[in-house]
Amino acid sequence: MKKEETRYIDLKFELNASMMCADYGSLRDEVRDLEEAGIDSFHIDIMDGRYVSNFAMSLNDMRYIASAAKTPLDVHLMIEHPNNLIGIFLAGLRKGDTVYIHPEAEYHPSTTLQKIIDAGMVPGIAINPGTSVESVMEMLRIVDKVLVMSVNPGNAGQMYLPYVGKKITKLLALKEEMDFKLYWDGACSAERILEYAPKGFDGFVLGTTVLFGKGKIYSDIIRHVKELKF
Image (cartoon, rainbow, N blue to C red):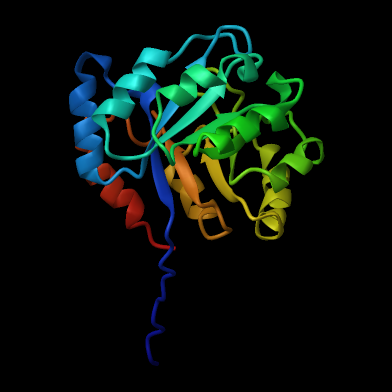
C-alpha cells in the first residue's frame, strides 16, 4: 500500500514580543537580540493603575524602545481616557507604529482613534474577555487591527479564558468584511498558535508562555514557532 503523503499549510503570521516581560537590566540587548531573532514588532503595555490594577511600562520605556529599535512598535494603552494623553504617546512614536486603545476606557473612542490616524499611526482596539463584539461593531469599520485579549488585562502569566473562543469565532467571520487584522494577546502558547493561525489570526503577542524566561536563545524559540507544522 502506498504511503500517504503528509501535506502542510505554509502560513504567514506575525510574532510580537511583549516587552513588559523583558529583562530590564539589559533592555538594549533584549531589543537587539529580539530583532536579530526575527521578531516582527515590540508590544508595549502601558498601564496606569486605574483602568487595570497594575503599573507596567512607562512612557519613557516606550520612547527608549522606539529609539533603539528598527522594528515597529505596538503600543497597548491600558489607561483611562486615553484621549486626554494621546498626544504625548504619539509624539514618542514613529509613523506606522500601532496604537491600541480599549473602547471602554473612553467616552468617545472614535475621536481618539481619529487622532491616531491623523498622526500617521495604525489605529487599533483591544477587546477584553468581557467585552462583546456587538458593543464595538462600528469601531471595527474604523480600525486596522483588533487585539483579542484571551485573559483579563493587567498581568502576565494568566490562564487562557475558554469562553473567549466564541467571540473569536465572530471576529474571524467579520474580519474580511470589515477589513481589519486580528491579533492574539494573553497566554499564547504554541498550541494556541497551531489552533488559531489556520483559522485566520494575523499575529500573536508572545510573553512568558513561550518567549521570555525560558533560558533559551530567542532566535531558537522564534524559529521553532515560525516552523510549526500546520
